[in-house]
Length: 538
Image 1 (tube, rainbow, N blue to C red):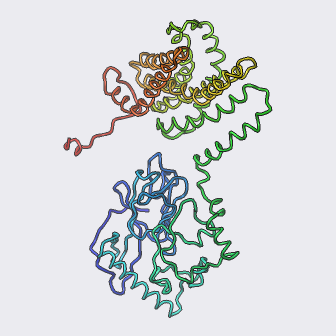
Image 2 (image 1 turned 90 degrees about the vertical axis):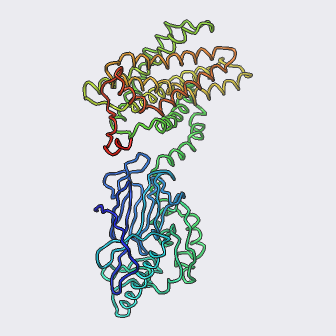
Image 3 (image 1 turned 180 degrees about the horizontal axis):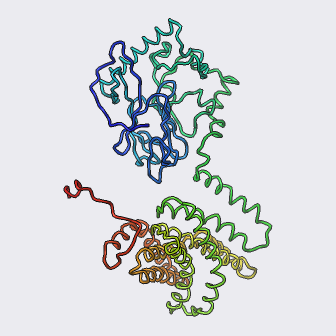
């Protein structure tokens, strides 16, 4: 595959006796690629693709454009949605220029259009809607139709009408591709740009996940395709395309698997744990079920990049460290520093609860960052450490929620009138406890990453990063002891707003720190090089 500069030439029509082959032109990021008929154009984030789109929201193998019987066809591979004209499509015929967006209607954009190569070897772009180009297409199709008719009369190899009706190719030795114009019985009707072959849907060759318009006007002879079982079976295959579903790569998408799992988990918990006497089982079950959902949310907010093997192993090590430190360090320290009997004194809640628990979650992050920096000379983006901090917080919150929910379910811990508060408290621990610990640990980990990257102010940055969430944590727990809990809601809202603010401005804060002599040090994030012409414009 070679990249070609776009060459737009005046082309009023096909030359007499000349050949005109429809080629494909794909424009992305200011670069145009030209593909000959018969090639398969793969689009995605993987470097092996024909068109590489280096955007994290794009799948590794997102879409492809293939040469079909009636021209080029764009197919969504089911790993990420593909949008044409703002609508999600599974397949689209390239009959006119298509403005394609990947992953979302505002995602990376590609322009896919047809080009024609004449006898002189020059490529001409055929823009949709232009009268001159339309006349050129009609002239080219008419020339090809005449040539195809002459070939059929002389007995030359071609595709038979029987092969068209059955949807199967003839032996390779006698098949020669011709355009749609060589099928006289199919003249006078056109397909919608997003239509697909019914035979491909019947065989399960394409995905039926997305609705697609059918033929705009079908000839009578094609209204009853030959299919096993007659009309009823045809209707069932269209309305319940099980074969296409089974072959659809969309089953490998994490979102669909999550929906499938979380739709069944609550019922499975009822069946598995209804007869158990272990009071920790409900806490483990529901907390571990909710934690991955929060992890996905944090990944979407922070955007730390790809989860590599290194980051995966760091996640495992951090979770293990938190689960070990909580019973061996955190709980004994809290018991020794416990002076929270009086709700009027807030300081014991800050140093006896906030600092102890936030240090427990921050310590594995700090050790991992320093080991990577000193032993392997690896410096990670601060957003990666922020995400790993949320994982540490989730692990801490899950373990803490299990301890609390087990105590709530202990005999004698509640009376019948307190059933509703008990249920609400159980739900708060299961659904929110890990989330709260995650946002505090994420803030601390952000500053730990900054401190590791900038040695000049390492200690102040790390201390500030632990102190800020520790104060919020202590105030949060102290507010739950007051007669009115509205202050508790306010502190939670402040913590959440701070976390979201850091997720939005992490790169900006690091750039300002890097440019300020007070913090200047080493960082893996470098300023973008300003080109001379950009400097002249400013």
